[in-house]
Length: 417
Image (tube, rainbow, N blue to C red):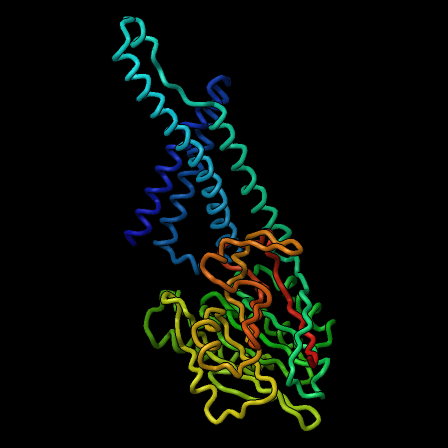
């Protein structure tokens, strides 16, 4: 068993033990039967949570039924997050109690009244504890709503993108970008079938998929093969790999199994009619005019993510066009290399961040915790003549839902500036 898992389980238990002090405060005036029911329900949930975590170490959780795996870990996350919020308010209460105790102790030392020490007692502030429990209900119900509704509430984001050097035949060209499908997170095929229908209703001229077809293994994509074969466009469907597609986060028995999985995943792209770009380039042609298209494997500006991408290899013998488009999964690639070394790349299309599947997005304002990790995390960014679009992702990973940052289908209309 991993020492990290053991430490994690101990931390969860200590949080539960701490939060239960607040629970006891809430039910102290309830009947004995009510208190016993709350006690057994509370600690049964704790026991089930820790047992599930340990079970995932003894029986590889990848082998669990998908629905059970996805939703049981989601509920562990939601309940734990709610308890952390309660913990914050209880800690604040304890800090206040500590100061009250200190001042009270000093007052007793300088008091001549013998009754002072007997009457001195520092109790919890009911208001803070109750506030913590009330506020913890906000993420609890929001995250459940995000699982039921947000995960499949597909949004079409439309953008007109103008280029000064766009060849005239490509004026009005419609591009659809999708990203981060994470097929291993879907329990049925119906939701992605709905997304594909929305895409095809747009009648795109070309479709780009910017990585993360699966969570870990190629078999996750197999149930969706017929659905993905429905995607088509006059100029084709082009795809790249994301960091999850390499199987780097899966416990493989040997390197041969990992390599075989990757090769099967690559073959799957071709089987559904997609052109997988592995550090290479091509050109979209229309009426004698061309747009350059470069596709690289995953390349991240973050040290904890892979760098399989090779722009030098991808652009070998490349003929720079009036408009040059790059498909690169991780948006940090843009700042790390593209804006410095490849300034002829006019438009980079990325994904990866998912907008963290959580945030606030209203006209004129968007916020997500992921913005503290990625400078460019959703929508369109510009630096001089270069543009980057970060797709919010169509699927989900870990938490099986979305709150505020909804799944996206990007539709771009190219125009001549």
